[in-house]
Image 1: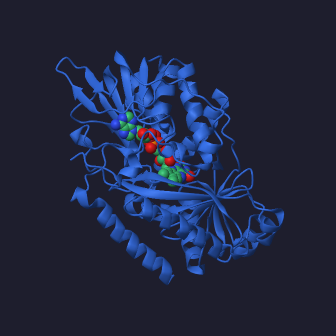
Image 2: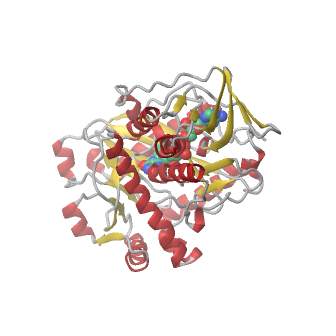
Image 3: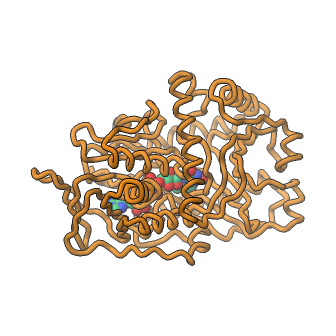
Length: 449
Ligand SMILES: Cc1cc2nc3c(=O)[nH]c(=O)nc-3n(C[C@H](O)[C@H](O)[C@H](O)COP(=O)(O)OP(=O)(O)OC[C@H]3O[C@@H](n4cnc5c(N)ncnc54)[C@H](O)[C@@H]3O)c2cc1C
């Protein structure tokens, strides 16, 4: 039951990814010694990414709660230290026009209001806590890679503006070229606000330091290996070097979830590997070849999409689906495939060199929506996961909601579609296999389009 879904190399908590983010955040230190001896606190948080750290910050700062975070790797080891740094609307595994059809206008509106709130929350935390996360841009661009895809974006645009009250703009290929950039597959784009880019690891480390400043205790290199609840109501959590007693627990391990720690969480998630390459800095001439003038974050409209952005030092970040097993040989092929794809979309950049590459796990659920709540059979256990590759804002927001819930004792106002545990995946051990099949079909459809 506790067997990991992917190759072991994805769970090496002692080894940081050789990422561009790790290479450009070494000036930020976090005082987070491993847990040792026997300790106790009101709230223990398992997982030190955005969900756990945002919960810790808000519990300590806004509710004066005695809280400790246990993180298996270093702070930012997980997806929060290795993502693309897009702080934008999303969090679901379907197009917004499809969500609208699935759950109706009111629930979709409710969810997107929370998404806008979540982007603003990240900006607000940055300002309030003085975080140096290198914010960049003010919108997200979704670029149509075929004329047909532009029709799909038009449907999303109409739902966004007419039904959801979102700030969106639809640009045809010429208008988009004049204001943003060109490529070999640019047929117009949907622009959505609010959104911005940031340095994800600097944000994660900054959150940890803000939580520490407000009185939280953070332990890195403290993998939880056992979690039991005694009859006296205390949770007893063990790491290799210590133990922690707590009245309440927040379980915030998302795509890296150890499913065997509590049976309730088994088979609730579908972790998926996403991979990123970062090139050497582009020259002015290379940028001019595609009239590149935007600093916004962007993605294309493929079913298996690519996401990309020009970083402040003019390196190009380009991401997409990772390998289906996580095996190092497969990952090497992924990086080659991503580089080929980049150079197919922008052929004049064929001389670009890849300086950094890495990968990590994003987390989907069976309902294609995030999952936020408290266990039905144990109201001292809270959780948040399943952000569908859009956790910069959604995980931060989830952490705050869980903190407010614990701090006030009242369930926060959550959008209906995120409330409660996600449904279980059937034939759970085969998850990577059936996801691989779905990917194969999507890739085939992408090729046909
Ligand atoms: C390559 C990639 C690109 C992405 N790009 C974007 C993007 O551009 N924008 C966006 O919004 N989102 C993006 N995401 C998703 C986003 O990073 C996540 O949704 C978000 O970071 C989730 O935060 P979290 O705190 O819930 O989980 P994580 O940051 O993954 O943190 C969970 C932590 O739990 C720890 N853990 C696991 N087991 C244990 C244990 N037994 N004991 C203690 N700790 C444990 C792990 O070490 C990990 O650090 C991307 C993800 C990846 C992998």
